[in-house]
Length: 258
Ligand code: CO8
Image 1 (cartoon, rainbow, N blue to C red):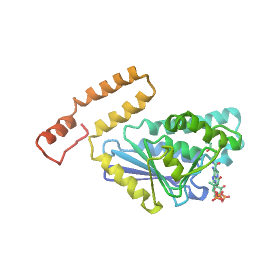
Image 2: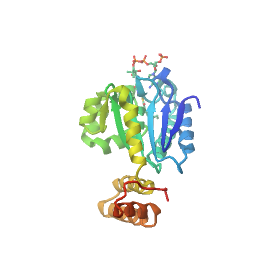
Image 3: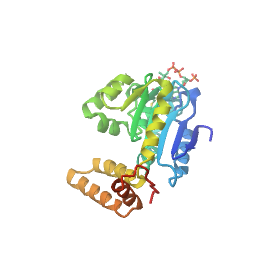
Image 4: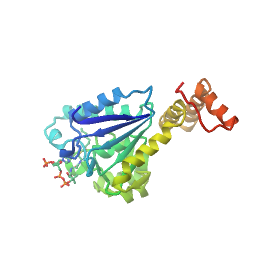
């Protein structure tokens, strides 16, 4: 693939958006490749993904403005759907995804990071939804996910003003979980991913589903979602293994993803 690189290191898969000459902006070809890379992830062996951008300047500087500039209404909707479908696939993938935001995360780049489970960033990261300055709305889920992550008031302020924010402010408002020096970011993301990968994969998967599905439901419905996913764990080898290891005072656990 030309625009999206993929590498698997033990149980961690690393996806890199690789179009640094355009600050990793998302055109149709990048979105198609990202979709194909996600489809190709070996879910039997990969237990966590890291998503980052090539180069030291940008995670993703948005959807490709050149490509969007001449779209019709129908083409605009179709382009929005193309991005939304890929981002939703990432969001609902059975394994967690950590966005390692290594620079600009603007427009579609901020939206891509928000479709990941966890965001960490470098100290030079810049987040923002500049769309209204371009005469459009956020179109890859930004109006929805930003409001869910940082609250409606803060999301509205950021989206209506189109103001970019730096890493420290992104940390303060809860858009990212941690900020690292640029040169440490990927190692920190891989370390977090490896820590996740050590745990029982079906339990981690069920936690992701419980949190995601529960956030879209009422509390009464959400706790039922959790009950069912909790109950499902008791049909797994890894529940027996995890609890037996505790009772035997054994640190090593042989989780088999079964
Ligand atoms: N699209 C296309 N090309 C881009 C983009 C982009 N979003 N961002 C940067 N580039 C290109 C530049 O055109 C430039 O190319 P060239 O060298 O050929 O001129 C190259 O990347 C380097 O960029 P700059 O020279 O501008 O680098 P600077 O360091 O001076 O500036 C910035 C960096 C501040 C990030 C600047 O490039 C910028 O403002 N980029 C645009 C950011 C932006 O507005 N992003 C949001 C786009 S809208 C969006 O994402 C909507 C998503 C939903 C779509 C739904 C569709 C229906």
